[in-house]
Length: 246
Image (cartoon, rainbow, N blue to C red):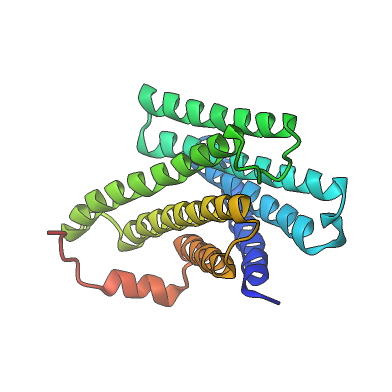
């Protein structure tokens, strides 16, 4: 089994495990962030499963493969929309600008999906169509927003941690979540590069697959440590010196 397939299987397991656990936590009426994050990760796990079926099974041939590929893209967009909703609720509550940004990016993903489907591009491989770039760009905006908000929040929490006003595990969770957003953003940029290269030359370097797989594994590690960190890791975080950021 190659690294790309391994990363695919790991992404399915981690995203669904963490996502479903968060959804179970989100059954409380006031647990909207947990529900949104659980939905985002669960949609991501489902789209990885659809991609696995579309690429590595006999379903890849024919109309079923096309349907699975399109459903995979829809799953990525659904995950990104839930992620933006989480960002708005947690980092920008009550912000009209954040709401407009999320709604615009979500609409752009939908238009990209519908436009490419109307052109018969079920996998989203047609680099000559604007719909491909509209969809990819809107998804990248969601991941970039996650990275920026998490890093800004991390800086604030580090200052509070230096005065003993917050928990080191919470601070690290925010940093890991920023790493998750950064890994997704970088992986998405490589996907765009691979699609463009394949569209122009008919193929792309296999090294891009390896790089995307490594970023996927890094994102999975960040998610797992953020929500299921072993006790030794949590104890190490709490015992570390609480030096403020410069």
